[in-house]
Image (tube, rainbow, N blue to C red; front, side, top):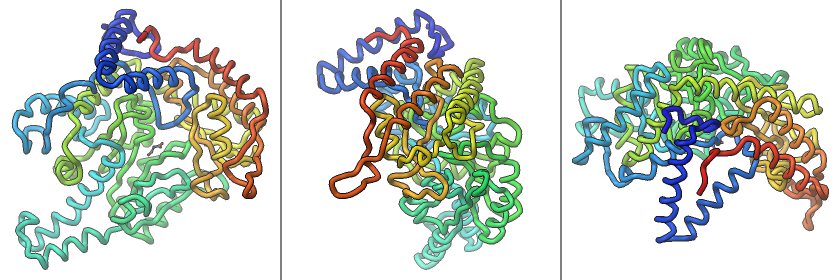
Length: 488
Ligand code: DSN
């Protein structure tokens, strides 16, 4: 085994050992439920054979994936390191402490919490930690109590009402914010009075003066920065100034771009960690780890974040925390910086490839890992474009664009991301070819009438195009294999 588990050039020994491990694991699974073994093999084949451009997906290393398949899965460990509600958690403590240590070192954070099961969980932990620190603790002090259980029913009701009556300002969904930033279908929208800031309708960029004006007027307890479909960088120093001016806590959700922060592509004002009070992330997107979340915090918020379980979370997934530690160790290797820079360079190459072929991009380009294509210029909805691309083996997701005429279900955009294919070894030339193939599909797709009238989902892809694009992408994919040397 080599210490460098880089996926694009793994050592021969690494690939051979991983192959043996997977063959053995699949044989064991096959003996119990062969259909699951077959689906697992098929998933690898499908991932190997498609152009995966979903901005929130990646390919974790065999070391990360294999770490999840162990007996740590069987252990209950509610509580936190050294303070568990169950006995015999000494090895879970080791794992959780290592994951937190790697996260602190990688991101330069005073405190890290490795338990969240997802990005939504990480944000919930963060919200409740902020509420506990800023509302519950002073409320208890005012009432002369140390613990919520010491309050009378009447005082507890008053405090609960206060906890449930706070304000949150975040980026609007249609300009790239996330559901967990206070939107009604998500619990965050039910917990908080929410307002949104958007982007400048002309440039598509965040207008910091408008954010400041909204913050002054709304006076939120929490200002949320971060996005899942905004193709530009954010100045977190300015966001912190805005938060400080109105007495808000700055929460940055870096779920999408954590890999660019870890890889030092985003530094200074663009690195959220030194500026935010609390930073949340997923671990499986550009960070290339297992599915899960992390919370980073200043000393002020750390004690409340540390109570994430049982405050908000169920028992920690110790096997996933172990895999987070492995992935974070990988992200601390020099090769990860090269990877992160390539992710950003490749996004630019993809954007340029679209622009030179006449496509329209939200904000006119990108300077992070994602590109948002406005498919109305092809006369299509996002849903039609997504389906036609999938027919040709190009895996993307439809996404709203600012002032979207087709709403959040059909949408008018397609979001592309470079983290996954960069892991396979794609460079600028390959991403330019990807842009060419995507434009080929979209130019040859037309909306189609449905029997009940025109439908925003129906489309017709011209004959032969899917085969042509499949054949062209098969060549690039073969030249950049997924898990090279891994045979089942
Ligand atoms: N599903 C993630 C994304 O695709 O951006 C966010 O929840």
